[in-house]
Length: 82
Image 1 (cartoon, rainbow, N blue to C red):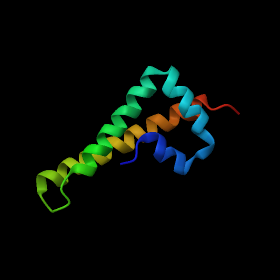
Image 2: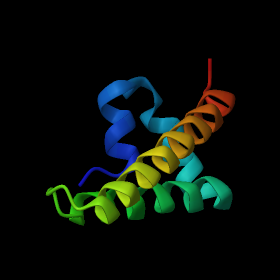
Image 3: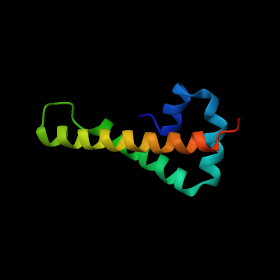
């Protein structure tokens, strides 16, 4: 399972310091990143068969994860040092 920090580290390694700072100083950012990690863990735990209920839950989780990713990256970009 990848948490938000791992996910961003792969895509934007230049933002690791900013992420570390936000995780330590910004409660909202930390809460959103923890939610991201929980949702990723739940998504990874869903059965991979074609159970319609699991498929619907997986789609809802993916949608929320995308929203969180967008929100968290916006916070990172707002706080990145130039």
